[in-house]
Image (tube, rainbow, N blue to C red; front, top):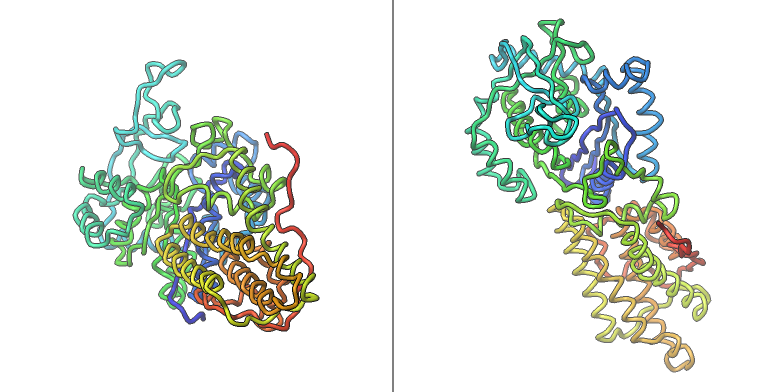
Length: 526
């Protein structure tokens, strides 16, 4: 077990009714960067992702494609969702499917415990239902249809007609938890973040909570209600439980105690499920509520939320095939303030790739390694008598390292990257000011030249460690080129919170040639 504190992070589990787009990949990368950072910092880290495979939407899609729901889910998991993780270099510890036996069995256990404790009762239910959302819609999300749907009630999110359903259902006494939830938000202001998400959740709960219909009897694709197998569990009630069934709930209490509670990264459109329904379910079961629920913003393309139905969905490979995986990861973490909506454009991606990755970081690394090869036969020179300019770089590296770690602790990935990038900018300015090419022309400046290049190399060493959670491929190549493995070991073994401690790179080791970390992309991206 790692020596640090426990850090359990989850993405939502994604519906398998369609192929993934960059909106899904954005969430995956954010969780992965946080997990890699904590893992490398020595925290006891666990990263979970997976797929949500039950519910009417999956059943209808499978039927429309002439197959069974399980066969449809298997096909999409193996052909689309698991390959996505490789495309964007996700280092998850587990992948849960709601059709896994470990999940279904313990959903039933959880439900039975709530039923036995009196939190579930049966009753008649009639309401407008959106198959797209898999949700009985609150009045605030029901609007009058226009165009072909004029005269009908439609979902405010999907703009499609709602279905009036009347069923005998089982209900969860969620109304019992209104005050307890408000107390939770008050006592733990960081429980729901960012602030805009927290305010929205509090406002919703203050209006009073209704009991939640948690079963369906009109179809059978789902987890059976244990005391009444004519009903299946409501897909959201089933799906939310993945976060505990994946880490041992009901079957490995030691593992569950080690991992739970979790930090949940979710899109803001599913915030209410995670910040209201989910903690109420856990309270009813006598379990700890999550550590935090963070609702990030939407990715917008042409001003609209990304959506397959609106043809604004962009496949991640459309970006990675041209710019590479590291650039994909960097762009979405740097260009968008995590928690807010962000607009994607090919022009912005291309501009940042050239300015920040190719010219900023990549060119810096290539120049420094090339100068060490040219002026010192590839041997890392010793540092002697550092001047104020050299000490200033040390201070920048130490400060950036501390600031980045503090930002990651607040899930502010964009702020962490901005802090780390100050090292890139300062080192580029430092090399311009110190002019090692001029120093190399006079043997009297040999020690000074060595100190300048050691300072630049040690800055690159810190950058390799700090950027490895975001740019795992480029930093691994840089680490190898620096020869750091010889004395320091593998890059992923470097204690991340000590990255800013100066002087870790040993003089006397040999650097090796470094090909461009981010090759120039000449073709115009449209």
